[in-house]
Length: 156
Image (cartoon, rainbow, N blue to C red):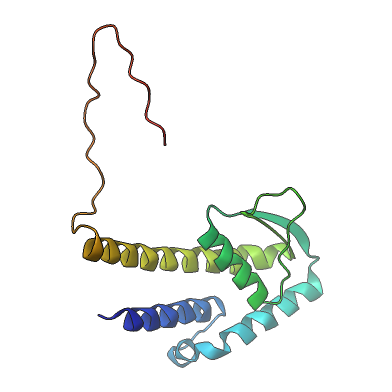
């Protein structure tokens, strides 16, 4: 399968995930993923009318997750920010807690998992096609011991 086809399938899968978290009940609603953002925005507006926003600090493990999360916040008109001296992997946002618990964080986790699978598959294909077909993990072997000599630990 070509890379363009894989990307189109990924985008469609991400849209279906969003539709799921938008509360799509029927098959027709799930296929009409274009309206998912608006349904989630309506849900958020309803929650904001009854629940005070709280400042959250989200710590994301890498730049890919951070980019995805920041984009998801912006998609729902939530302003991401961070304070001076905070790490680049930290994202701050003011959001109603129930929206974080029921929609924002679960949707992010599912999108992040899906995107990671895709990035991993692409990375494996590129490495196998351009570097070496065997891209499995290095085997674990016993560390040799020499009498009276301490070997330094390997650096990560």
